[in-house]
Structures are given as structure tokens and as C-alpha cells.
Length: 402
Image 1 (cartoon, rainbow, N blue to C red):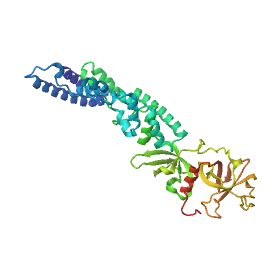
Image 2 (cartoon, one colour; image 1 turned 90 degrees about the vertical axis):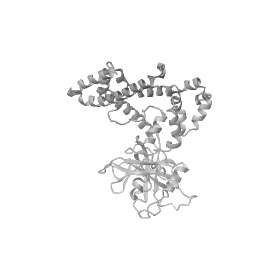
Image 3 (tube, one colour; image 1 turned 90 degrees about the horizontal axis):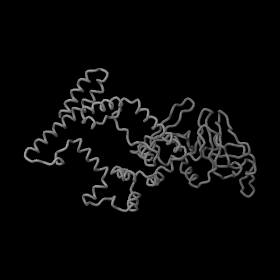
Image 4 (tube, rainbow, N blue to C red; image 1 turned 30 degrees about the vertical axis):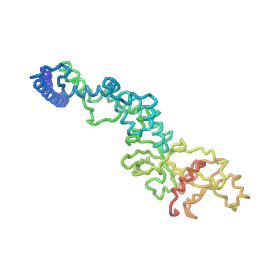
């Protein structure tokens, strides 16, 4: 009690100095709370000790000591069953524990990680989270998303290091450290974060951390969106690059399309899972894709081709099929279209006579082709997977486009 009163007097004197007035107001509020708890604990101890000479270890503890002892018991829970004779999960063989953890869903696995230090190390293991990561996020995460996650970790680490050096919380911690020399109870206090809000789980280079960052929606990752902007007619049967963030409450994504031309950043909410895919190639949205399939294209092959409205726009991937030359009657037994240097691309989602219905590319020397009126056609990729072809057929518009 004497130490507390001494600390209170020193704090009041320091409060009079203007440079530290703001920090000391926050400190005094915490000190008043600890003083009240100490007084209550002291009075309770006098009442209990009035008629019974209790042993020192049975004396009532202050609430802060109780919390500290409870935390220590949780951290060392593996030692409690041995002393109390109660069974524990940690008494099971290693293989049995691993089998149990492998069958837990992500939410339960995260809860188990908060039980004790031993379980935390087990539950954060990458081999437990690889399956969960693959099952939920595998179809929307590609190489670009992994690179972005590494960059996100590096940025968060730099921000944390800078905040620890220049953050306003450093002054408060120094005051508490100085006063703890006068009053030991001050060392129990923990300064709040500068923002007053919890910063959430610490980021690290683990699959669990990546999974939880995806789940929380705080991590924006690169992917591609079919029929962007809620299926706008100008983007039907196309797939564009975007940055996505997951919305846990609606189980959908929020898409952020990069600015182009005179347009600013476009946001789209409620993007369903079936409209999102991982980028199939590593070509950036403004780069021309190197076509490596032109020599093998035949009529009937399914393709995706880059197209953009003008030079300032990013490319989008548009679905089409390889057609026959005008001189060919379409008879597969006599068709020689695959020997021609010209490849006919058909976009059958558009009506006959539409300027978007057909495009011609050079098989041997294909570069970006087009003009400001019809747009510019870039690189091609042949669709070899039945799943990719089936996906485009599912997105086929109900009405033919003009």
C-alpha cells in the first residue's frame, strides 16, 4: 500500500508538467484502478485473517496476480494432469494426437492452438493447414498470389519495426518502466496499442497465417474474374485481372479492378466463387502473351485471346474457337485450314455481321493486331482442359450479343 501511495504522489507531480500531461492522464487512470483493486484485496485479507491464521499460500491474491497465475497454469497445462491425476489429450501418443488434429476443421484447429504452448506449436504446423488451404483457396490462388503474400509479409514486418521505434506507445512504456522502480505494481500494467484496437494475430510465414489472413478479408490477392462488373454486356465471355478480398459473412469476394484510360478504380461486391479463377499464365495485364500454340491450331479448337479496347487499357482474356477459312466448305475430310498462315478466330457469342464476330491472326508472325476502332488482339492460349472449356460454356449468355 505504501508503495502504491508513493507512486500516486510521484504521478501527480509529473502530471503538472505539460510535456507529459497527455501520457500521465492515461497512466493515472490505470493507476487508480490498480490502487482500488489493491485496497479491496488488502481489506479482504484483513477480514479473512481476523480469526484464522492462514498459511501464506492460502492468502487471497489480488486479481492481477490471479490472472497471472491462471495464465501460467494454461501455459503449463501439460504438467497439471500429472499432479492432479486427471487425463489429458497430451497424454495420448504422438500419432494419435496428430490424427485428431488432422481431422479438425480450421476453426477448431485454431481454437486448439490457444489451449497451451505445446498445442500451439502442433496446431500451427504447415502440414495440418496445407489440406485446408488447398481445399478452400487452391482454385483461386496462383503464383502471383503467393508472391503478393510474401510482399505483404515483408511490408508488415517493416511497418512493425518502424512502429516499435517511432511509435507513441514508446513514451508510455518508458514512463511505466521508470515508475516501476518506485512501485513494483506498475510493472503489472500493460500499455495499450496506439490505435486502441487489437492488431489481430501476428503475421508469419506459415500456411495458418496465410489462411487466416485470407479468411479475415484483410489480404487482397491477385486473381481473375469472369464477366466482370456483374456481367456487364461489354465484358461478356471475358476474364480480367483484379485484386480480390474475401467476405466471410456473404462467402463472396470483393473485386478491385485497376484504373485504365480515364476510368478510376472500379469496385465490385458479391463476386461468386464460380466467377473467380487463378491466372492460368504469368503474363501481366498490360503485357503481350507469347503465343506458343499457333502452329497446332485447327478448326474447332477452343482458345482464349488477349484483347483490349486501346493501348491504355489492360488486356482481358476472351473466349473463342478456331473457325474455317472462307474458301473452305468445312468438310473435315478435305479441310486444309490448318496448313494456312492465316488463323480464323470466331466469337460465336456475337451475332452474324457483328464486327466482333470474327478476327484473323497470322500463324507465323503474330503480334498485337488491331486498331482504335475494333480494339487490339494480343496473344493466344489453347484450352486443353475439358474443365476450362466447360467453364466457358456455363457462362454462355442467354441472348446473342450485338
